[in-house]
Image: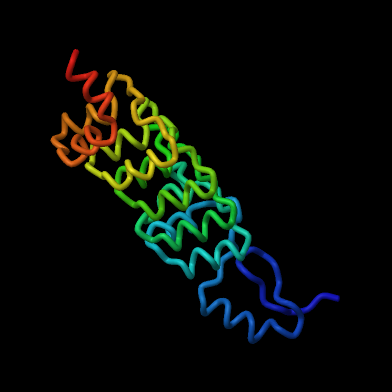
Length: 203
C-alpha cells in the first residue's frame, strides 16, 4: 500500500512510520547514497588519516580496492605514517601490490622511499612483493638507498630481497646511495657485503 513517506536522494523511501523522524535525521546529516564502487570518498578519508570515516565507508560496503577519479586506491594514497589506516585497509582486503598505472610504483615503493618501516613490515605481512620494480626498474631497495634509509635496507636484506638489482640505467641501490651522498648507506653496504665491495674496488 502506498504511503506518504519521505524519499531519500537515491529515490528509496523511508520505512512506513519512520518517515518523519528518520527522514529529518538523515537529511540533517547530509545523507547521500554511497556508491560502493566509487573510491573517491574512501581515498579521501585514507589520505587525511580519518580512521572513523574509513571504517564507516568499509562497513557500508565500499570496495576497498575501488579507484578514485585519478585511478588510485585507498592503500596507494593513504598517509603512510598512519599505520592503523594501513592495517584497517589490508584487513579488509586491500591489494598491497596495486600499481600506479603511470609510474608502476606500489605501496611498498612508497613506504621504502619515505622510511615507514612499520608500514613496510605490515605490507609484507599481507604478501606485498618486496622486489617489485616500477617502470624504471627501480625496486624498493633503490628508493630506500637513494633516500638514506638504512633500517629499511636492513629489513629488506632480512627478507632476502635483491639488493643488487639494476634499474634501467644499470644502477644498483648502492650506486644510488653513492650518487646522492648517502654515506650511512654506502658504509652499511661496505660492512654488510665486504666481498662485493672488495670486488668493486678491484675493478
